[in-house]
Image 1 (cartoon, one colour):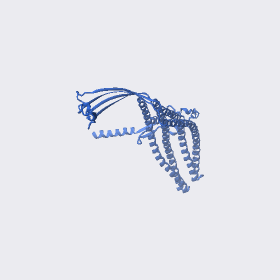
Image 2: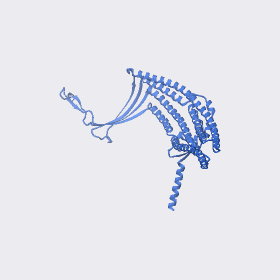
Image 3: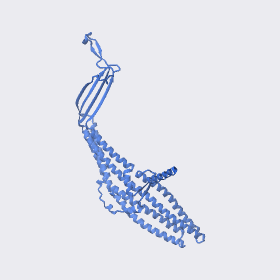
Image 4: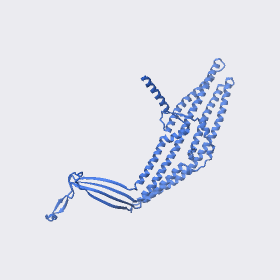
Length: 447
């Protein structure tokens, strides 16, 4: 009975494990999953959190700061001071050594400091805010790239799966053709070359099949990495290549407004310019005076031996308030050079922003062109496949009727196989070029 229960437990566990190690995804589900679990996307989210903490870190430097110190001193050999001997009735012109402190002492002090004015602190607050915005822009850019990578990885898996299905169908047809041709040859109605021609074609297709099987495994692994899954997870894709190609054939996207200012790359370049402006302000602020205030209080105790923890130990209190004004006067041109360098960097950032704007316009135009060509090529490849299928069917009929040669049949088959792969690639190109255009326009469908 115990053995049966143990066996049942292992069977249930293996079934549950098998279910847990298999994940099914539509394309949109894969995108949603990757945006949360892709390792690059997660690190970009952590960068935002770090920027938020840095913003508070910068803010806190201008708020009251309290520090405490505890000092303990033990004179291994006490310092002496010489006093004129006549003070104690001694011989004039001579000195007597005197110790003015006890052998051991302890001091505990607490100090509160507060910035009253510091130009660099004000610039620092603005910079922290801009840095947070830059981190958010980087996260948005990362999400766009992750989305595009998922679409590419998903499409590559579907391409491999579809290619395997097509190759297996072709192999079945070829094996049937070889069987029939061999029978005809054995009856003396066909030449041996006809069988050999078909065998050459079959060998090439089988070689492609093996290579595609290897590519399929790599495609699934790349898909898992892109989503943030373990390589051992058995992923299952629920969409198909033709369905996605038809869904992504949306001509309205070609008429989308080319608002470059809304693209993430433009925002990044613009924030870089703002950051350079703040660096210039920071260098200028270093010529301004700084004003700080402090107040402290503490207690000190003195003894010849270590008895500071005793209740009868006397402690002497003290406190002090002060203000510190630091006025920069002369730096031998260092501050001026730093300011001029920051100004040069700002001019470069302005040029980069203009260059980015022009490059983005060109990038969007190229992406639209690529997408339109991909859709046109997709329609063309569908027509070519229909023609190639008809040509291959006609040549197959002619071959078995003895009208066409084996070379003609092989040529028609090779043309058909090429048309099949070209159509699959055209489907993938439609999907990928649309993703590229959406990324360039920063127009992501809300699903």
